[in-house]
Image (cartoon, rainbow, N blue to C red; front, side, top):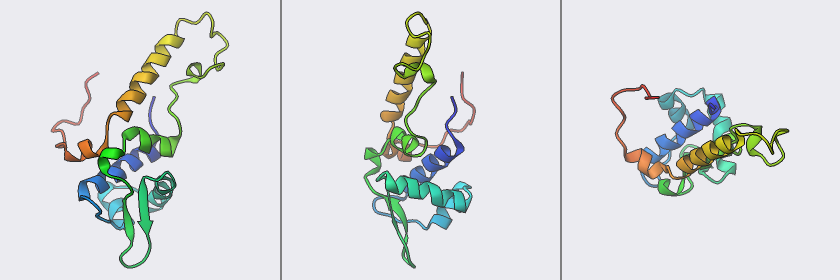
Length: 142
């Protein structure tokens, strides 16, 4: 499973805002430059996050974007689902989504993997992420 580029950009934008501090506003152009996000793409992302109640936006000379809630109250799951919708590893995890549902030994594996992923994302908040140091290595252990 891979989250969309749009969800990745959304996560980076929210993390950037969380690191600014309480009630700090940033111009969308500044966020786009700092996070290497195409400005037109970021505008769409910010709109979706605003509709989901995660960001506040304001126009004008002193306008910009700010978090709508405390970073500790915004999770990775909130941001990813605001952009990509509910997480589904495959059709098997939906009730009635699998033609082999009754005799398939894989469904419990997919369901458990999805539960674990959703739980991990739900328990990871931007308050915690914003205070963590950046890793010295960019590779992931498999």
